[in-house]
Length: 112
Image 1 (cartoon, one colour):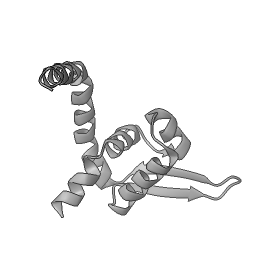
Image 2 (tube, rainbow, N blue to C red):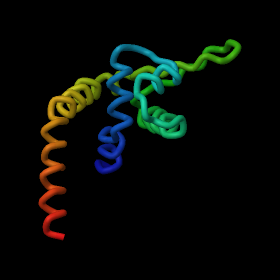
Image 3 (cartoon, rainbow, N blue to C red):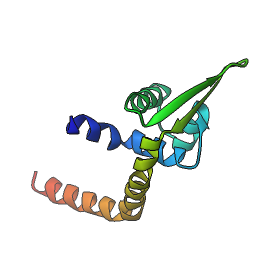
Image 4 (spheres, rainbow, N blue to C red):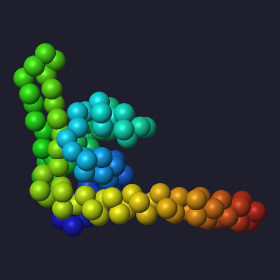
């Protein structure tokens, strides 16, 4: 069970969705624009999984076209500070990690 929970909350798209929804409800296309690089299918699957796990609610407002909003639940809000911290850590350490990857690749290319 823990593995499936960690797979959901540790998934990069889930972390990004939770981070964005920390600022309030968003429509699907707003999320897609703000995330960038996520396919429509992957975002749909991510949102469906977050909804299934009780982290996000999906609200359909009848209109033409129908309006669909996604929002964090109380459980999702309890995750948001951790998701924001993880995303912040990734941003802060991106260049260090890139340097480590480059050094690793160079060492292993030389030994091949």
